Image (tube, rainbow, N blue to C red; front, top):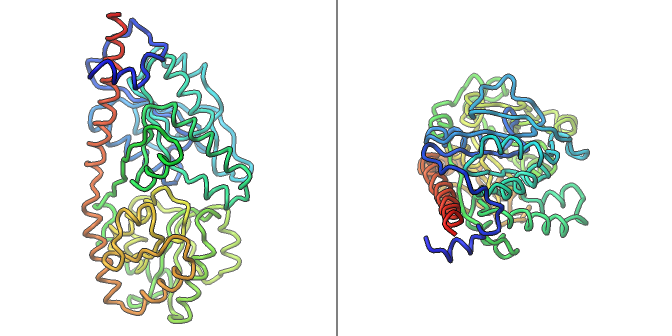
Length: 412
C-alpha cells in the first residue's frame, strides 16, 4: 500500500502509540453496542451471529454493552462481556442508551489494546469508543442499523430530524468505514454526505428456519385446521412497525376468509392496545430459536407492513421457512424478492396497494405455495458463511493498514 493511500485514510491524525507490538496472532475485536443478548431485536441477534462467526474464524472478541438486560442467564459467546452504565429512553423504555465511558474504555483498552473497534450503535457510548480508538490509533468500523428518519416520524419527533441526520453523519464519518446491509442504503448515505460506506448483507440460518418445522399441533392451538389460513407477523409490536396497516390488511382478508387467523409473534409497547382492540388475534409473545422457527413454518403467509427497516431479518427468516410474503419494496425485500416470483413487493408507501396485494395473494393457494417454495430456494443462497468471509476481509484490511501506518511512524 502506498504512503498516499495511508495518508488519505487519515492515519497521520491519530495519536498513535509508537511502541505497540505488531499483532502476530489472532486479531482482537472490541465490540461496542447498546443492545446485546438477551435482547430480542434485529440488531442484537444479527450481532450475536456475527460474533459467533468471527469467533469461528479465530478472532478474540470482547463486547462492551449497555443493554436493558444483563447477560447473567445467557451463555457467553464472546471472550469477555462488560456491562456499562446507561439510561432508558423515556419514550421507548425498551431501549437503553449507553452513557459516555471514555475514561473506562481508555483504561481497559490501554491495558490490552484491541486491533479493531466495531461500534454498533450511535449513542454517547459509541462516541466515547471512537475517541478512545483514535487516541490509541485503532481502526474503527461502524454499523448503520436504524432508520432514524422513520423513527422520528412515528414518534412525533420530526423537529429533530435535521439535527439527528447531522449528528449521525458526523458520527459515522469519524470511523474508517460504515457498514450497511443494502446497496440502496449505501447510495442513500453517500448522497447525504457519508464518506466511506460499505455493504455487508445479512444471512439466514436455513437449517433452523426450515419448512420441516411445520407443526399441526401448534396450528390447532391457534384454533385453525390444516386447510385454514394463518397469517403471521414477526417483530416488535411498536409504532415504527406500521402495525395499523397490518390490522387493516388482515381485516380485508377476513372479509374473504372468515376462518383466517392473525398470528403476532413479538412484544412491545403496542401489544396491550392491540389485544384490547383485536381479541380474535393470536398474540404469542417473544419466541426464540426452534420455537420461533416452528411459528414461521406453521403459518401460511408472512406480512411485513414496516417502512422503517434498514434491512429486515424477519423477511429472510420467513423465506427460509417456505413462506410467501407481502412487503414494501425496499431494504431486504428490494435485495431478495423478485415480485411475483418468490414474494410480493409493493411500491414503498402504497398502503392501499399493500392491502390489495394481501387480499389478492390469498385467492390462490397454489400460487402461494409456488411463491413460498421459490422463496426457500432464494434463502438457501444467503449463507452466513459468505457474510463472515466478507467481514473477515474488511477487518483484516483495516488492521493491516493500521499496522502499516504504525510502521510508517516508526521509520520517520
